[in-house]
Length: 328
Image (cartoon, rainbow, N blue to C red; front, side, top):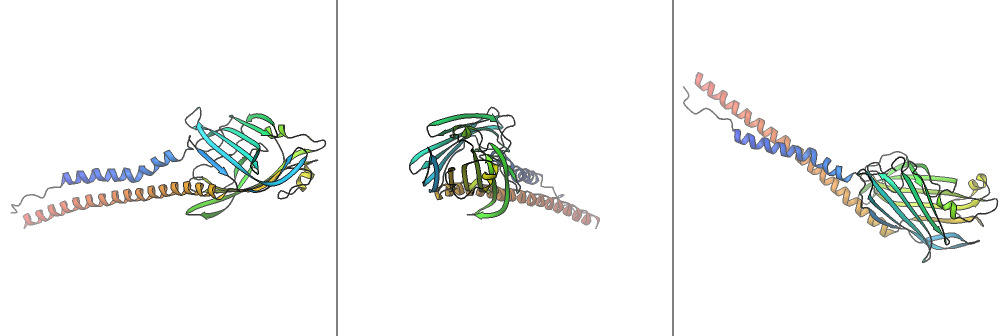
């Protein structure tokens, strides 16, 4: 008869391992989703400035078209909306010919912080100052992206709101590119010979038998993970035409003699692109770290479960061995 003490199940050790397994499982399964829950909505304290490269610009001043070197400066910010799920998005775009500011556009929208689309039924306000005159325009916001992309944008077309036409035109996904260490999506938009609307239409000087039209191309590079816009490249042409046919015959990339109001090819300057890329790379690095930590937590939980199973198996094996010795 075996007189040795019966093998004891290491309950305290199993309890500690069980507690560690629970912690590792929670760490691996819920840490990343919790952080993403905070990161995904549009922040309510955005404060960004974008400056374009100085480039040839043609503008109408009085009855004369002037060509020089100019650039755009845009300042966008967000603030808390009426609801926690909403944010007020404001932007101010200033147009410079040389060192002289010749125009300004202010916009205000209420956007859904998750989808970044305007809140349905909310107002969209626009204020334009041009040539010593100004106009304030307010209407229901069209259902299109304007200043921001949602977190984790998709490879599809988005309705994108242009401030000159006050209407949406498809912004189409084109391809995927690498910018620095960030995987980005390229989207493109073409606006062809559309009537000018909103506050801008109210401040442009009228012409007999001619109406203001607008054509544009716009390329955006957007971080595929965070939705941060990394670069903007576009050509904008605002001009007079007798009708839609003449407007469609007018080149986007070249001024139209006697009819151009504004024409320029714009792209963000290097400092703006570097700032936007740094921001996207910082967020992307944070997301990669979260993924690694989640993997470590999940792997640790699996290993701890295996360790507990081994201890239970070892205990049962010891019991079986003792029973065999007693029978012998």
